[in-house]
Length: 335
Image 1 (cartoon, one colour):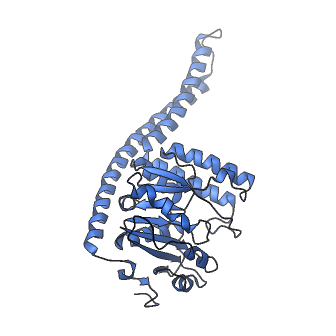
Image 2 (cartoon, one colour):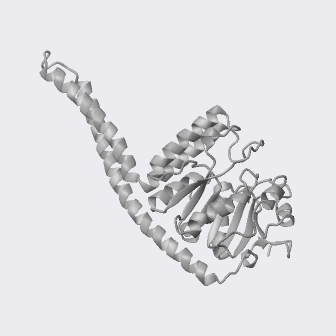
Image 3 (tube, helix red, strand yellow):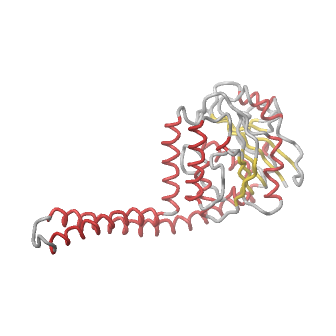
């Protein structure tokens, strides 16, 4: 049983030593623990610091790719290196590495495919009131969109079984936390959350410069991911609003046409009702087409899963150091 801890980083040379020092090298139920740092084109000494302070390997990008792509690259590398469990944590030392055994315990016990560390963000004292409220609202919305019970949807402290990791397909370029939850819920993966401690990180977020920027991108990510996996619901509810509007305006026209002022005008209401009804029918038709496309996408994703699983078994790679393009302490450069 191999556990790989992956740490996506961008200019984290200052915080990496503490982050790496807290990661346990022995976890009950696990035979070996390896640490992989994914350097997202940092312009400081992140890669060198990682190797000097205990990372087994560094996967380094020449230019910045963004958190979602870096996370996916780490997942792919960990699978190819033979990981049975993959833990993702941040390089800014926000999460306590000593809690990794607690995070992976449900997977080892066969009780979960994916585990999310719950910071209880609605009560964190170092979050502003606005941020606490937004975290609660966002997590509530994500629970409804994903069909899961996760309380902290934006937590980056997570553990994945090998099978769950093989089924992950991060498509957006912003963040993996929201999209992977919707995917996992849609695929009926067993997800649990465990309470964890979170430290205050005074530096500005590397993911989004402002709260407004984060909300805009996170909202778009949630909308696209949900529409991708539940297109019929999205189009049906949207079409229903247009059809309801057409019905209300149509009844208004009938009331005036057959009411006290029988035969009076109000032709505009009839035209508007017809337009709304046509738009509603068109949206419903698009929803049916999108649903058929979604069914085809599920078949393609199943083929992709089987292909990735087969390829990972055929590689015969044993450990991170055996992967191409990996920096290790023994070599000090890209292999």
